[in-house]
Figure 1 (cartoon, helix red, strand yellow):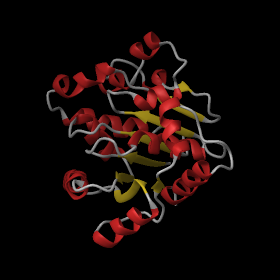
Figure 2 (cartoon, rainbow, N blue to C red; figure 1 turned 120 degrees about the vertical axis):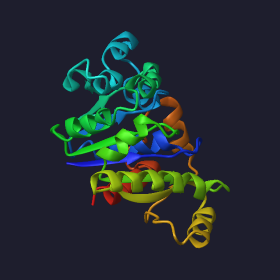
Figure 3 (cartoon, rainbow, N blue to C red; figure 1 turned 90 degrees about the vertical axis):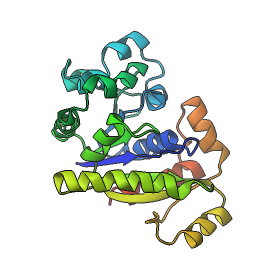
Figure 4 (tube, rainbow, N blue to C red; figure 1 turned 45 degrees about the horizontal axis):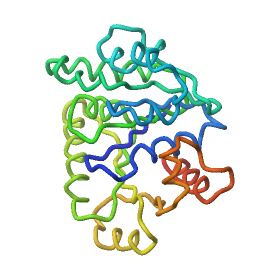
Length: 241
């Protein structure tokens, strides 16, 4: 199993869309779990838009972190073949305050999901430093940071990198870290890589593309064989090497 988290402390970079479409790109050939660790629960709405909200409210990641429900009971099948979802609900926003800084919450989460029977687990994280993000970082083998063409790129990336360094100091192991240019033109992608050679960029990038943008809005996957579908297939292949 490989666990891959998408993380950005900067909003508007397409983090949830990147998580969702990368996970879906592998689902026909592999057994995938997508975990929503963001109280905004956009990944949940992407894959479970037709699920009863009360069901999700009663069985979601918040209850796993609180240890009030068996983890397996919070896993829902999606409409995408071989892709399951562990959803979030707005109640997740309480978890940092209610955990009282207990590091055991983070370590138990990592231990539990690593015992699940999946080929790959993808985690969508919140755009804030808190228990949810740290839980994802402790569990992950790879953290992908979407970066867009703006002046706050370095600060947002470095904050995630600092958190990963703390993971390494705490448990003697840390996930690999990659930057993924998102919502950029070909020229902006090249400018990012030239201006910031110190960042560990992935080979691929997410271009400005109406099909990708609409996919996040309408919770629909790109058409098979389309440019958008091909982009995320390549990103998925790179992320899972």
